[in-house]
Length: 424
Image 1: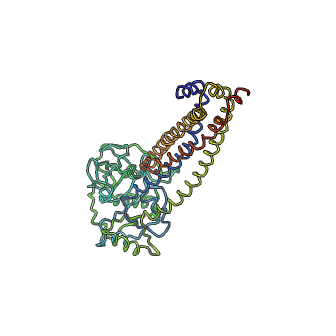
Image 2: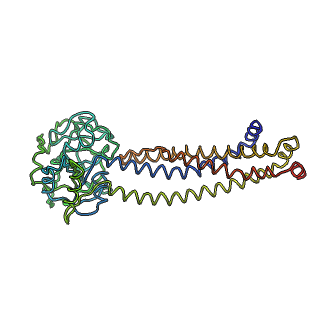
Image 3: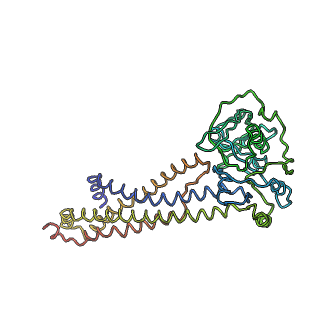
């Protein structure tokens, strides 16, 4: 029987290949939707795992999380200076890390913060931490070597910006990989960001900036001859001064409470008319809900496409079986029992369908790996593409459904008698 099936598949290999490919593409559509939604959900959850509580000025919770954790460009109102000092002095707080945005270099956002942020994100992979105002620590994916120098660039995304030529940073360390957007960030002392923009506003006659959106993307020539930024004259970093209130404010503060109870107490305390405290998981849960709704809609579309492709293929196979009446009649005339003929037809069709389904899973996985890799390179968020036990059950269900559906052409062959087949 199997020699007969293989011979038949070799003789009709073009049609068999087309049928298997159609089934594979229809299956890959559904698999891609499921795997991509899961990769986005797992990647974003892991990216936010290092941050317990985020405090910002009153406004959009979603935008606060997207800007402070995922480093998405957007203007944020500044918190009052007293908020940072109060959080850093609060006995319920293990770490309160300010973050300030506004500048870019070569497409990488420059984030003003403290050395605590490096520890919160997993520590240094090489080099050393902040010791001077002109020091910079780069993320794992930033293409800057230790010892490189650069000038920050200020502006709005897609618009003309301005180089802070009076300021120069030197790379002194590199963070260990985190799988988050911070792998594509450049960390500098928050005091240097304040000084840079204070000097900029004074020189140009502007009022102090009241928003801190991520700014434009650009790179500028740099000189390796300076040990530290000339705008800071090699000043040492003193993070104890952050307890004072003489700072222009920050757009967000990343808080690590000492306990779960402290986290909830702090969240309640800082949800006021002027401040906002939010757990990243709260915002992500709402985003996952929206993402899940979109996945269900796309899942319905994929299922519909699969059903249409399956119905069309069954019709083609049924017509093919009817056209093979003479062959089936000859087999019956030579003594092949009905169950054997039915088994041959069913096995041949099931092999085609099962091969298409299994290849569809492989194609869907490859497509999602390519998409997730592209998104990870541009966003910095590592998106794990992985099968789970539920996917195995899905595969088994599809194969069972295919096994049942392919009984139709097999039953057509089963009902054929030798006389009917040869007479036709």
